[in-house]
Image (cartoon, rainbow, N blue to C red; front, top):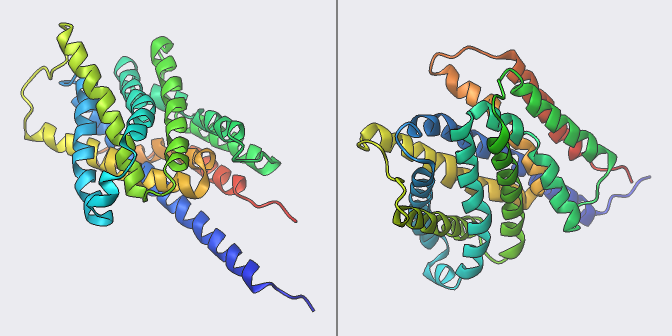
Length: 308
């Protein structure tokens, strides 16, 4: 007769629930993040990259701060470690978001997606260096599947001139992984919305200072034309869905799965972009669907628990 420890069963059930919710949040985060790519492509026709990313951070933080106050109370907001949040958010999310948008302006969304498909590698290295993950065979197989699936999903694109643009994507993805890991570990007492808001506020400070300094130096950093209602609607998609909601769910995903496994979900983003473009008249792409399937398989394999 086999005996089951009730406490152990509860821990396993809680762990399975955390994994399931983490992956569900990862899917939702990447889908909302993907909504921002088509919007950014249109906005870049009128907005310089630095002005656009600063406006994106400003709108996202303006939305998140009141929600944080309502959810956790004014005391939690006032007593938060804003200085630490400014450093972490500014140097990682602030710089990383600008570099990613700059790469898209220098190349195209496909090139950015292809190079960003290697981001799980840097995320895994961060966890290994910080000693928060032990590498096993299942994780390595899942990691390889995630990278291969991301490349398959975007392999139809023409890389073109990938010099500066490619370097910007690599640095951006590395900074994003570092910032995600640091956000979860550096603010253990904050809620998910608190962690998200305090670091995005740091990103806003970084880009606002860069924008003011660039403008003071005589560079043209303002929108080229009139910002009409259509552009404001696209900005709302880019900032609210593509940053505020996406980042909130992303930080929750990292907290449940770790930044390495969470980053696997990034490689499904091209498939979500394709689904969004179907509504605008695009056609179904079986190659992107196959790449997404490979990535999903990698997510499942990487989270397989070793046998006792």
